[in-house]
Length: 391
Image 1 (tube, helix red, strand yellow):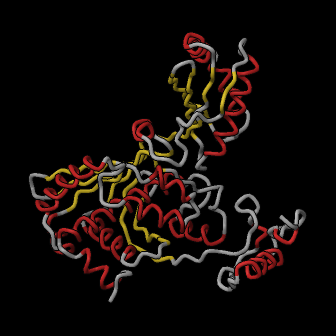
Image 2 (cartoon, rainbow, N blue to C red):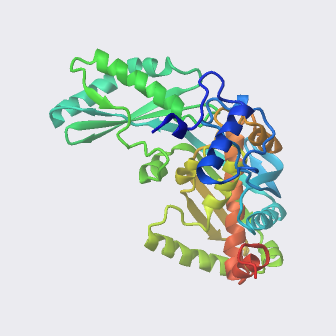
């Protein structure tokens, strides 16, 4: 590769409008594409170190406002208007419709049940017995491992180390709380320090890999559904039959029968989520609010559970066992993302649980709207009117 083929960089001052313009010109020379809109942005590129490399411009994703949704959480309380970034027509309108049903039925209760972020190293030995004995040593020396891990972070706390022996290896799953940060990088650094301490102190000085893939970073897994990754959050509401019929043109008995059918279909498919579409609302909020969008892979998994009550009303809940959100760090401090978090009152320290509750409630609203639209024969019609398949 010649010097002319390399993407322009300035090792001393790379995060400037001038360098972004040079890279845009490089793209035009190499591809013929003029980045007129990519180059239109309002903030200082000097804010971006740690967020991106070879900064060239921005992706402008439309943001719509859904709501209000009434939430009765332990952290999120009141009526919220929700910024959602998407290019899918009907999405914001659909979520607003579900939010109206929930609000007119008295609101949504949200509960953060557990917090946990993992890094899962694997230690390798000559025999299974050596690996077993190493596990006993880890248990006996937990205090030393914990001290080494927590020496790297102010907010990360090592809560538990799970052990999973396999052949002549021992997979360890380090579980942390991470404050208001999502925490993947935090726990990676902490676990590396712990593993280095283990390797130095243990008589066998065992070899290890920092991740043996048991943490399933940015991938769905059954272990995360059972054991939690990020935050385990429940959103639940009792939907009044009168409200559902008036706003959605569906009664609760029909909705419950459809839920039974959908559960069977999700089981047949081996789906990670048995509700209509958790990923839509999560992705739209993640993009708007500066979350790591790849975490949708874990965060969208969950379980919908419903009951048809004796008075004809409908209990509907969503449990998200691996919801990974942050109100501080990462992309949350960038200008547009911070503004969207401020709309929700979720920017800064002490706000991650509040954001998690809001996200779970938004998922419930979207499921109510889409599930009802399918039954009322409005799903295709709404896309014909507002979506991308307009005539």
